[in-house]
Length: 569
Image (cartoon, rainbow, N blue to C red; front, side, top):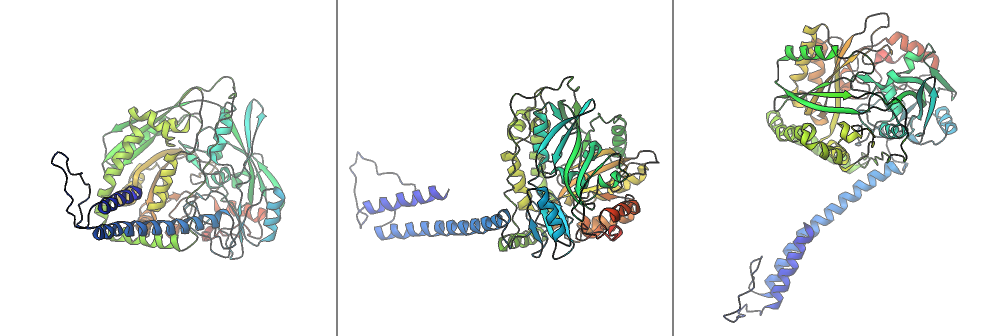
């Protein structure tokens, strides 16, 4: 646009300089006067003035753009190049650990051990896809150990099946691609390919009604004194280590069960929007379909601004009888994380300006602004006619985009659609939220869901509800004691602008109403709502802290802003 603008200005000036100063040039009657896209000036001096008027604002725009790009690149390189002033931030430059926290990027086990011994407080982190401060050490002189260098995968036979031994820092998308190339797959595909394996296991990542920790076989962990120890399913502490929030130590590698490949078919069905009672009844019927670990759960999707409810059907086909490796490796999943800034004036100024914008726009108007966004998102995500478009875009929310909708998988790649998704998250300051509560008793579940729906202004783009059976891992968000019957939980997730969450009608209002009207509700350890509700309890904290006291008697791995009921030592 800038180039066309300048071109027109130059053309205008040249035309003016070709005319006599008096502007009295005449043309033969048979020759038409040249047409002008810009108005004719009376003399050459005026043409130069107009040219200057064109070039001045264009130059100003170019200078401002260059300055902003320079600040942006500087912040990005501060983090990437490990500048001494760099702060650890999450993937869109928020939730900083502060200037006193050191960033360590080891590449060997020995370097991890040395880093653990060197600092009084340590936390492990990687791609930073969290929306709280649990990736930060509790002390000002602590360190964040960036484990992204530990990203190898090895496939081993385990009895009649297979297992993947993978580095803690490998992205879930790349892990899936590497095992897909061997004719294998995770039991359920990763919900977000940019998450890392260690973070997923530590926080309890899940997708399609199952958590990845359910297929966990063993963990290799660096303890508080630098000792390396493995814990597997036969170890009494396995139930504490499986979803440990990083409290047991630095995870080095993860061993998971992997299975012969099967493709997933997918379709979306629009349903009439019922009342809350009707929604709970539908979820109750969905629960009945979950008959084994091989079952893939459906989910309900709500576009609240447009009043539309859809059911997504995920249909797994039979697993391959023989494991057949791909003749060539699948293209790698490479996410360069181009928005990990949050290091200086530019990020601070933009964040404050965004807060001001959200505070000035009335909530009813914000809800109306969501209508065109929901319509576009729903059509792109759900229309059968756009299946090929989703595949071409690499739309990661469907099997076509994940490369698992055909007999021969093509894997997950970071595409321009993924880049655009991250741009949207950065500009809007979106944070991932998850509210979890039991399906039974159903009248109580209705109250919980009503509270979430009453905060519709926080649920941008769409809201998802999945069903999931309880787990016995002590700190799982769906924990239920092993001596009790399994319980079905509802997992309600959405994204919300951080600026709206900070308002009185945001996180504080939602969590306070959940506290009084939805007893026993939980959160996802890697997502939001911990600012105002960190004291909501779940799991078996005494048993968990007893195991932590033996693995980490110094409290070295305790994170920043740990809930008081989980501080322990």
